[in-house]
Length: 151
Image (cartoon, rainbow, N blue to C red; front, top):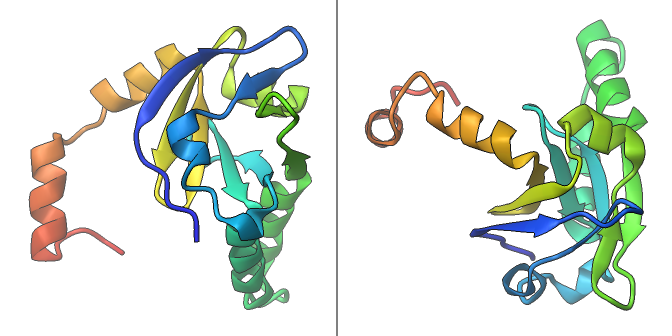
């Protein structure tokens, strides 16, 4: 089981590759086989799931009723951008151009650990998202602790 936390900003090379931060590599489970599944995130970012965590996501997807149009749409959107990438000898992953374009990542990339996955962001987009949230960290924390946030 992989668990990620923390944030780093790295430089993307001219081939679309970026290093996975050492503190995040250390928590990568052996079952992931140094492989991530990259896909588009819900905000303007890229999700990187270790292979073992992605398999859990696939099990959840298999439970969706394929006769419901919204389920088919969700699966298509999620899976059309999904790609397996293995860390190379320099501990980098190559991010497909379509995903880089989606996230607006050009040279710098903010890498955030979010429990069972890593997120890749354009640094300005990440800062804008974090500072532009309609509620403060404290307000969200209070609602979560009192059960007032939709789950």
